[in-house]
Image (cartoon, rainbow, N blue to C red; front, side, top):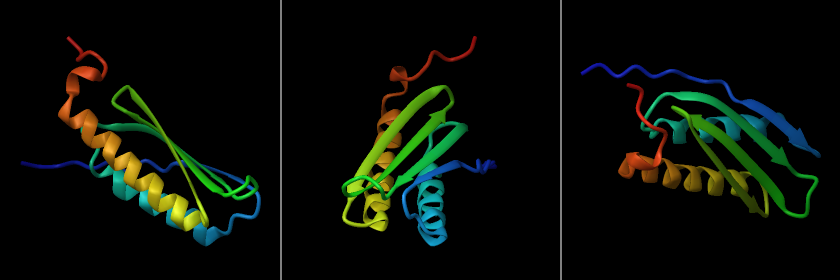
Length: 107
């Protein structure tokens, strides 16, 4: 069996004082979570916000027509990123277990 993995570079939006290291860390965590996607990843975006009370990370992902949005807040951007990755993996596992809740299969 051959597995083809397509790497989608997410659009990254930042608000406040977000360093390059924090953005690169968030992208790496998002890409690691997407290896669990049950279908092709069509689009991804990340928003890192250190200007709000508490640091926040939002991820928007389109997996074969199924839109997912997860967000997390933490004391630091790294903590928020780790929580976002956990939640995204959980949502991707849920789609894998319940494919009937996704979009209809093409005929």
